Image (tube, rainbow, N blue to C red; front, side):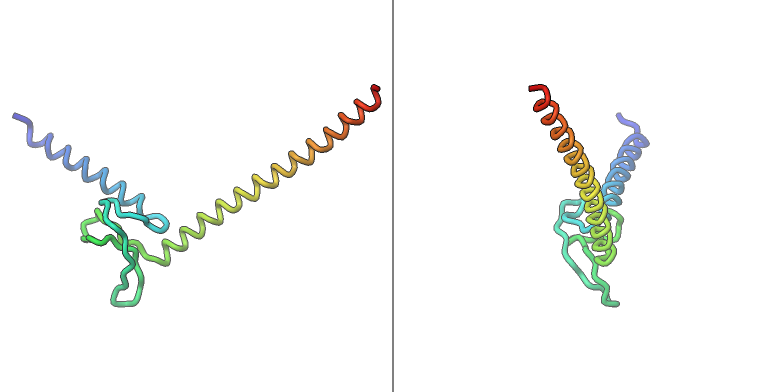
Length: 114
């Protein structure tokens, strides 16, 4: 017979792991709830919009994320990606310019050696 304390600890561990998934899912615009349910946009009595799991219960295991904050996080993520892309592009342009000058110098050396 198994120890009931051990079974409780395993259940608490599963619940904790689930809560960790839900907490990380509260970033940007959610595509799907951690429970696998679809996400809908709902409005509360004050007129605020939320991305909410279709089977939302206030037990901490489902997603209910404010639309304004989700869109703001998504925009910040796009800005970060854009900045990385711009810096990568500048670096490539610099490397291309350096390669171009090296090619010109090599051509000049080849023409002189003939």
